[in-house]
Length: 171
Image 1: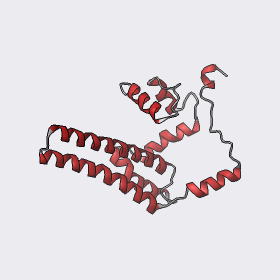
Image 2: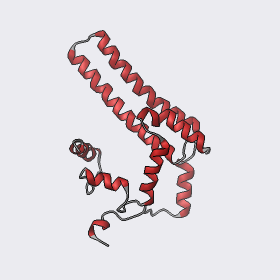
Image 3: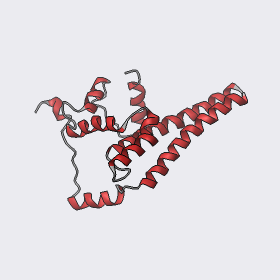
Image 4: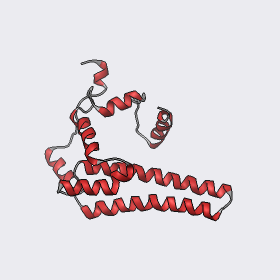
């Protein structure tokens, strides 16, 4: 095995026993359409609410400093909630909204994927390629990270993540 490939050991590893995994899935991976809809609706409400606050800020013609402060806070909220919607698309790609795949995909698209200009079926194709060759030479996530020069970075804290994202942004 080459040194390059050793960095990307294939497959997911876990020290959990089969029973521990079953208990984990039972506790944390239950499919609840109402919980999923509620969580997603809260994310969308924060996005549209922040956009509304930003618009109202312009209409009220506050001082430029107040407008800039409010706009910055709103921008941070929208960005954070859009990342949450991306996580929900991932959640939906694993059919976790509900047991019925068509309903799962419809809910995922309507509530999270389409507002993010994505489609859960297309995301699933990409994501399953990642799962199928995790860390291998054809893993699309590995290839994307290599293109932006992020293949050997450790992200063990929020500070490291934020600094690394700022470094990667131009790429």
